[in-house]
Length: 410
Ligand code: PMT
Image (cartoon, rainbow, N blue to C red; front, side, top):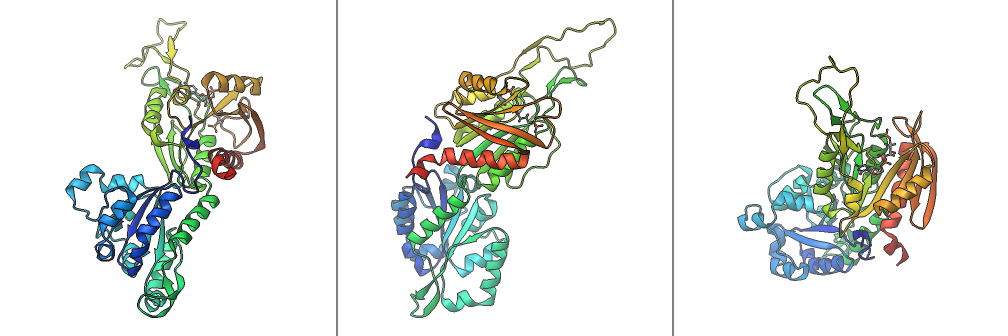
């Protein structure tokens, strides 16, 4: 069973951290939690001091199914799931209702309570559904704070217009829970990998012979880095396990540098646990020297040198053997009978998909361009020839379609 095919709801698998701040619209929060859960999201709630004046944590705990956090200094709650862990856990942070006060504190970069600290510590998408009196919403300082938050990539849903709890009529009402859930589902479509976690390997691995020599290969990492970039742009949380390459980390991507195949194997196994897809682009050394030397091996008295090698673990096959497992995508670097050899690897390693490319003189390795064919057990898709960046975009689109297949068909 692949983890990606578990269900087909609009927000399925998404981990949403809901921040409830002080405003009368907090009475809509239980309904919002219920709707988010119905849409497939896993919801944890954090309430500010102000928020808890309008809605009790007990109510939110009952509807979310988890204890509600409110205090940064709560030792028991921190021992269960620390605030940094919670910030990492979230795929999206939704602040609803978002008061003028939280907007100001966020704009100023404050970490004065649990919610603002989590927002500063998270790499997840942050979305606000403001709610306040119409004059407050129209005030220049609130407008300025909104601009500052938007400039940092935060998104706004609403506010709407209508009669307000204070008796006035105008713009400042929090969007209805149904509207918020629809907006979240729509942005998920625009970013087809939103809420997904993708693990990618890239580059070569290096197997040391002695302190100055190694067994390596010609992979530059370009193909894998382009895929990490495309997956992050499509909204995924991406971990990139990279062999030694000289490339910049794509924006928003968490990079883990390794040297050898065994190090790459260990990092992949540490990160694969909650992934929706694994893409093995790295040119992993199949063999490593049996006895690497701590000192430089001398050439004197050695007219011929027989280097004894042993097999490295097969990272891709090991990920494919996990249960449950992510969608597993391999790459096949071939010099001849490209598609036949790739299909044989798809079958022998038990993959969901393999991407075949020809390597050799000016092809596959190092260069900026490539030509890719995606092979699946019952399908073949020629992605054509082009820059690695362009091909990465096409491949990620195809992968998103596979992951969201259940949703697309519903
Ligand atoms: O990095 P670039 O210069 O941009 O070049 C891109 C590329 C040519 C390296 C890339 O497009 C590519 O083809 N990567 C796979 C290279 C490779 O090792 O292919 P393979 O046919 O030997 O291995 C098949 C698959 O098994 C690959 O997904 C590989 O990551 C995986 N593998 C192999 C051996 C091993 N011990 N563990 C593995 O996980």
